[in-house]
Image (cartoon, rainbow, N blue to C red):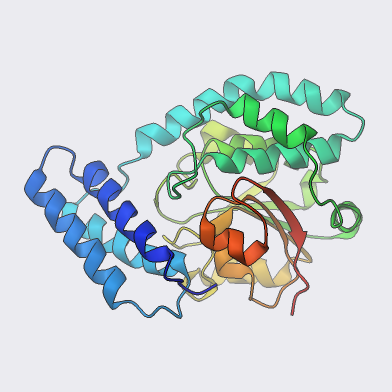
Length: 287
C-alpha cells in the first residue's frame, strides 16, 4: 500500500507524539524531533508504504535523541494488564461453541491496542472491545479455509504486532497445532510493537518457536528483513498476519495471507471498504 495524502497528517501526529516520547523534558530537542519527522516525511517517495516512511523517521529520531525504546515501560504495563484478563478469556474460549473462532475474534480485538494510529487505544475498555468482537457480525468467509489450512499446513508463520495484543495472540495460538507455529516479532523497538525483549513476559515462547524479523519497521518490509526471516517466510505454507502495519506492507506481496486486524484509519478503511472500527478477517488471493 502506498502513501496517500491522508497519511500526511498521521505522519505529523506521530512526529508530535515522538517529540514528547523521545524528549519529554527538552523543548529544544522536541523541535528537532518534529523537524526531523516532517522533513523525512516531506522528502519521502510516496510510492513507499506508510510503515516504510515511518521506519525512516523513527530511526532518525532514535539516532538524534539517543533513545532506543521510549515505550519500554508502557509496553510492559500493557502486557501486564492484558495478562490479568487471560485466565478469564481462556475459559470463555474453551466454553464457547467454536473455540477457534472465538480465539480468532479475541486476537483481532486485541489489535485495537496501538500507539501508532489515531484510532488505536492504550488498553481502554479492552473487555468491551473483546465482547463486541466476539458477538458482532463480521465476514467469516475465510474461516473455513483458515481452519482447514491450520490442520494441513506444515509451517504456520504468525506475524505479531503490538504488545498487549500479543497476549491475546496466545489464545489463538493455543487453538492451533502449536508444534507447527512460528511466531515472528519485530527485530528492534518501534512504537509499541513486540520485540524479543517482551516475548518472555507474554509467554508465547512457551507455546511455540519465536523469531524476529531483523527489522525496525512497524510492519513487514521484506526487503528490510533478515535473510533468516525471509527463509521462514518463503517456507511457510500458511501465513497469519496481525495488524494494519503488516497489512499495509504485505497486501501486495504475492503470497496468500490471512489478515487479522481492526480498521483504525481512514486510508485503510478506504483500502478495505470497511468503516473505522471494523473487524477485518480476510484471506488475500496471493496475486
